[in-house]
Image 1 (spheres, helix red, strand yellow):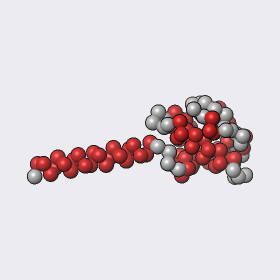
Image 2 (cartoon, rainbow, N blue to C red; image 1 turned 90 degrees about the vertical axis):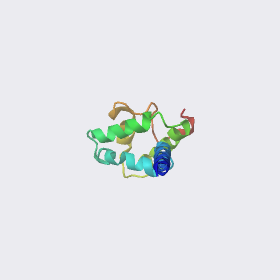
Image 3 (tube, rainbow, N blue to C red; image 1 turned 60 degrees about the vertical axis):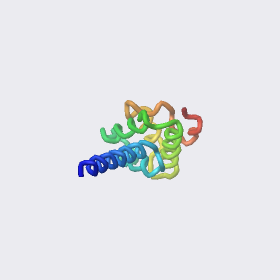
Image 4 (cartoon, rainbow, N blue to C red; image 1 turned 180 degrees about the vertical axis):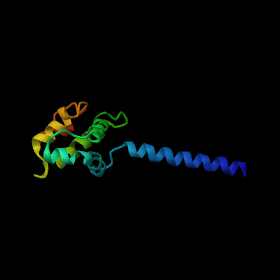
Length: 119
């Protein structure tokens, strides 16, 4: 009985650690889109981004668990989302990730950004 409980606990901890580790990696653009949804009002209308928006931008920019490839993927996802349609104001989009959120990205994001050069 006691060994079964210990084994169940070990399995549970392993599952939780696996889930945490897999969440840290950027697997697709859906995660990035979800993270910047609080920024949509600013991206459409200007003004001041919400605290949640800037917190999420900071997380995307500075998460230490992200690899170089993750940051390149984030860049590509943001570039496609922000500049791939007329839904968002391009000037607001460029300012969001560099200056509107104090701890934004260390690179300038624009339609011409080469995301493969991000290190």
